[in-house]
Image 1 (cartoon, one colour):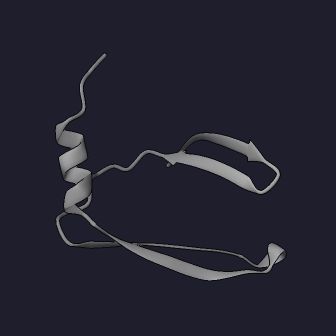
Image 2: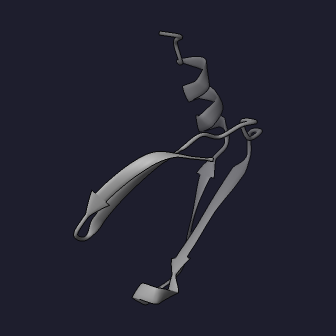
Length: 60
């Protein structure tokens, strides 16, 4: 789920809330923006990284 973001010019940053957390193993992110001539791109991230980050989260 999208959770804020912004930018301008040639840079935009977006935040996302991920739930449930993915299991260990590859997680593939895919994006494209045909209106701006950006072809489909993808990156694979190890799902265990999300679990490790969640383990360091603290409640404020």
